[in-house]
Every structure is written in C-alpha cells, then in structure tokens.
Image (cartoon, rainbow over all chains, first blue to last red; front, side, top):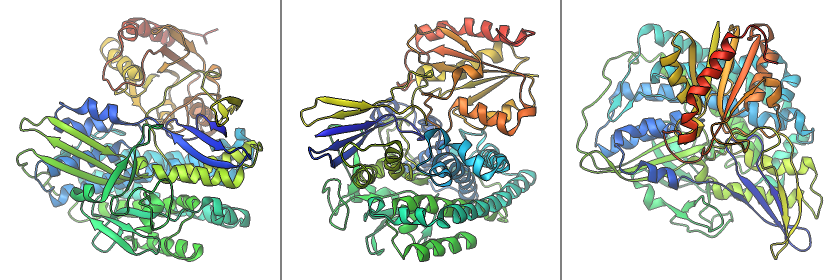
Length: 487
Length: 152
C-alpha cells in the first residue's frame, strides 16, 4: 500500500496533513486528514472562572471568535439558569449576523473562489485571491475588503472590540445600541445585501454558467449521502444564533429535533488512534466507520448541512436563492460537497438581510440588556458558526469555577464527512502514480468546500514550511515524496 | 504618521508576541499609534493606509534561538511556505494592499519577527527567553521609526 501525503493543506484555516493510502494496484484505498485537537484547551479551562469563558474561547482561533463568544455566553445562560432579555437576544443575533457576513465573504473570495473563478487546473501561483482579482477586477477586491470591514465594524460597535467581542454576559449583553450606531449598522447591512447579491451573480455567471463546473459539482467523487444538521427556528428555517437542532435524513425528512441541552442524547463521539480529533456521529444510528447512507450515523453541518436540515431561509431574497439552488441541483437534500460554496453564498445574503432586519427592529435601541442570574450549574450553548454547529458545554461549581468543559467545534462535526470527501475525490481523480498538481488540488477542493478550521498554525519563514507529500507502502516503507511549493 | 501593528494570538504563548509588544509600547512609547491586530488578516490593510511608516511585529519560527530578532522588509518574506491560520498570509496581505491602494501605503514597512519557542500551548504568557527579548524589540522598533532612509 502506498501513501500520498499533502502537507500542509493550502488555503485553509490552520494546518493539517492529508494522508492518502493507495493499494498495491495503485488505486486509492483510503484517505485521512490528521488534525490537532482541543483537549489541551479544554484542560486549560478547568478551574478557571466560567464568566471568563466568552473572552477566553473567543481566542481559540482567529476566525470564529464571535461564534465561540456567543456559544460560550449561551452556555453561561444555561449554566446560570437565566434567559436573556428580548433586546439582548436581538443585539446578540445582530452582532452574530455581522460576523457571518465577514466570515463568508473571506471564505468565498480567498479560499473558495480561486478554485472556481481561476480554475482547478490553473498553476498554483494563480489559484489565490490575486488570480481571482485578475479575473474579476481590482474594484471587486476593494469591495471585498470594504464589506469585510463592515462586518467587523458591526462586531466592534456591538461587542466592544472588532474581532474579539467582550459584550456577552449570562442573561444578556453589556452594551446597547444608540440611534447613531443603529443607523450606521443599517447602512452597512444594506450595502452588504447588495454585495451578497453581486457575489451570487458572480457565482452564477462564472460557476453555474460553465458546464464543466456544473458537471464537477454533480460528479460522483463529490457526492455524500449523509444526514444533515443545523439550527432552525420554529418554522424550520435556518437561524444561525438560536433555535432547536434539527437533523434530516437522506430523503430530506426530519430525523431528529432537540434543544441544545439534549445534545448528548443524540450525538456521540468516536476516537480513532491515528488522529487527535474525534469523530461525531448520530447516537441512534451508530458509528459504522467512514461511510454514508441511512445506516451510518455520519452527518454534515455548515452551510450545506444547514440548508439541507431546514425548510427555507427566513429572509425573502435569501429564500428565493434557496429555492433556486434546490431547483437547479435536483431537489432536497443536495449531496454535492461543492454545493457548500453555493449554500454559503445563500447564507451570506441571509445574514446581510438579517442585519438590516434587526437594525430596523423598533426595539433594537431599548435598554433592557440583562436579566439577573441564578445559581451556577451545568449548561450547553449552541450556535451555528460559519463552519457549522458549535457546542459549548460547561459544568460550573458553586464558586463559579469550571469543573468540566466539553467543546464540539464545527469541524469536528464535519470530520468524518471531510475524510470521506477527500477519499472519494482521491479515488476518482488519483490513479496509480498519476498525481499531477491539478489532481491534488481537486482532492483538496473536496474538503475546502467545508471551510474547515483547525487549531492555530505557526508562522515560518519562506522555505521552511513542512511541505511534504509522502508515499508509503503497506509495510510503512517510504516510497517517495511529493512537494508542494506554494498556495 | 507612524503605526506599529502587533499580530498573533495572545492565548497561544509566544504567538502572542505582537500583543505583548503592543502592550509594552503603550507604556514606553505612548506617542506612537500601536495596534493590537491579533489574528486580523486583510483588516491590517486599513491600519496601513494613510500612514507614512509602519512596523509590523510578529512571532516567527526559523530554527534560530528563541528571542532572536529578525528585521525584514516585505520583499524578504516572500510568499512560499508562509503558513497562516486565519486567511491570506502576511506577504499576501501586503501584496494585496499594494495592488489595491498603492498610493496610500507607507513608504516604508518594516517587519520585526521575534523567534518563538512555543506557539502551540494554551497560555497567556510568553516563554522566558522571548519575554526577555521585549526590551530589545522595543529598541529595534524605536530605531525603525526614527531612521531617515530605508534600511539597507
């Protein structure tokens, strides 16, 4: 058996190693993603003050600080037995929607678009934001930066700081909104709606207008028939901040629906020795290995998981795009991994519309910011991070210190599907020793669509990054290595 | 007008070097604009626009002794192998900045990289050798901000 390793993966948040096992016939047998994990972080938190967690967890990684801050704050709501005030809920969701806007924009233009707009067979030096801007023009680049800055400005106004908010408290938030701030946010929201529509238009023209890409999206190596999970409101529409967790099956029917506090009745974790990250799966179905279909407990989260687990989007323009996506791709659920990119843009539009909706809510400048807390205990907070469902579970002792912390981050929920997508893309695209640059990138496209996030990486000077692709046989002998120079 | 931008995650031990430098600057050189950019990426561009001079401070791993100070120009950090968690890496951000806002950027951008020992552990503190380098880092920044001509 031979092994091909891609290390590190380009254009991702974090670093991880892909190991692809070939059998003796040169065909792909299996593929795995090896990633660092969060057990060290969970231990680091034990004994600390629970009320510090929204600040601490915001720093787990640089990309989803608002998501962690919010999941943490909600876990504290639950642990202290307090419901946030109506105004606090709106303010939290408003900040949360702003975060989703800037996160999805980053992913599409910097991490996803290079594959589609520039092309998967283009040389690696072109498959980046610069290649994208060459195709769409520098003005688009300025618009990307501007709207990303808007998203961060919303976080700053509501959260106190641009990237790492400090406003979350059990029972509410520490900061309200005045009329001037409200108007500023409304304007940024309206501009973001237009930019989201522009981006969907671009996707339409460049991706959907190109039959090769459409074929790629619908091609076999990129299909996975897993269950799907996401937060929904009372009408089963996607809500990123709050609601019940809903799981749908391969036929698009509801399989389970439960509040955050019941997650352990529905989700279990499986550990493999060769990777630090745990695989989550549906408890009631069971762990059947890296396989899909109704008999396997593997499920997907994130934009495609959320849209598949719901019945629509709660804002009008995004809902239209939701319907259009399902009509175009043949109904629900959509199993094409590459459709994550499309679903992400539908969510971008939703989040932008939601910013406007909440910013124009008559009660958004009210002053009821916080409810008094009860006694500390145990609680679970769940939000939909850009990448998928995020769980924070805290056990708080009588002095307000953390006894135990369990975090299930979005990418852990998607870990099994990610490995499977890599394997399937490799199976379809790597044959024998044929591992050209474009082929390797196609494998990576399989998991980049998930927008996966791993623990923080290090910074190294040029030439010193561990860029190795290793080939091993069944006995563990190194047969050869492939290098990957730049992203 | 000058700006000093510190980048890195303060929760990851020496990766928080930029953050600690900014804290020190606010005490020692309060007249200088010091930005704790943490894990920003393209937003750094907004802190560069309209400034005449900029210093960017970050932890680095090159295999040198922890606490070693590397002073670099943007063209020296290049694009290969510069891994970053949070989006485009620093060289890409600077390249993007010069493509989009070429006439608004500082005439001089200096990068000060401090060799780290540990950027993986969860800790709010710098490791001892890196912490002891802080005064030298401040001196290096002072020098970079007061020079008349580009560093040879």
